[in-house]
Length: 232
Image (cartoon, rainbow, N blue to C red):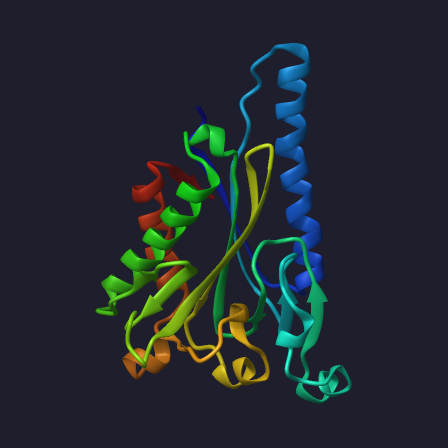
């Protein structure tokens, strides 16, 4: 099992371009697995971890409902935001500047886990990252992602998670709000969940941690939780 992961940082990348690039690596891993099975050989499958940030965009997952976009489509341009239907799980969410997006494109067979374990471990990574800053992140039963004040009227999401898998290869991932402009969440029903708020590290801390610093915490805890080695 190959637990080495190649790290890439794409910087600010339009969502559709990032999706196209993800699919390249996703298909590469899948094709190796198909060949291994067909020819009864054992070529090691690679793993990738991509950091990026997207310009303002709403993305709708396979199980999402278009009515969860509250902004009329003819007003999207006015707010400098686009709307894209995508192939990840989950409902509608927002990506934009001030958010750290992580796309692990990995072969789950390399890590001996199923998709449910994988999602729980992604949540665990972010929970540890938030703890480094004194923020108590939690899971909310039946609601994917990382939350604050679970079970209270003040419950709010700080990190969204939505993934796709095929042949136990993953794509898409998580979006952690660091210094995100939260007004963009007012125009959607985030993840299809009503009556719960959204927050950011900046809002909780009173200052915005440097993105590169937060990324270093993510890498550290991803390596620990997944028993992996991430290299540039």
